[in-house]
Amino acid sequence: MKEIQEEVSAGGVLMRKSKGIREALVIKVRYYGYELPKGHLEGDENFEQAAGRELCEETTLLIEPVVGKALGDIDYTFTHQDKRIHKIVHYYVFTTKEDPIFGKKPDEVKERRWIKKDEVSKLPLVNEKLRKIISKAFDE
Image (cartoon, one colour):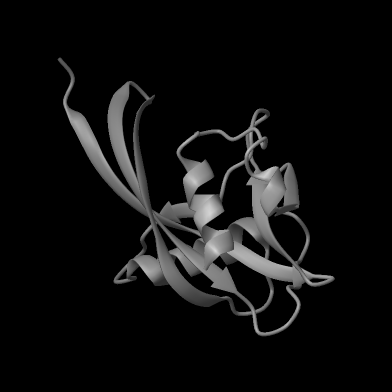
């Protein structure tokens, strides 16, 4: 039996108001399903700092995100380069003090998409566990 490697990451849900309606930003990296920006901690970052940095890197958000409440975490196991990995991702809600501004979309991101609360239940996701995280962001 293969040894399982443990990994910890952090990610975020960026929220905005558009014409008085709250929206959440999701991204598409793979050909199937949407997801949230996330990634490993670097240096002495805490979860909130890593989540904010990853949000900016994966969406090219050009203004400083403001971290809000923790939304919970999800865990999953996968195989990468013949290694079994168990990953835990801690998620946070983010806002900006002004309308979000983005740079050129990163090559690895196929789409950035703003969704409304009523779209969450039908949105194809890379991991079903993300649905509760995105839904909770609308309640914060």
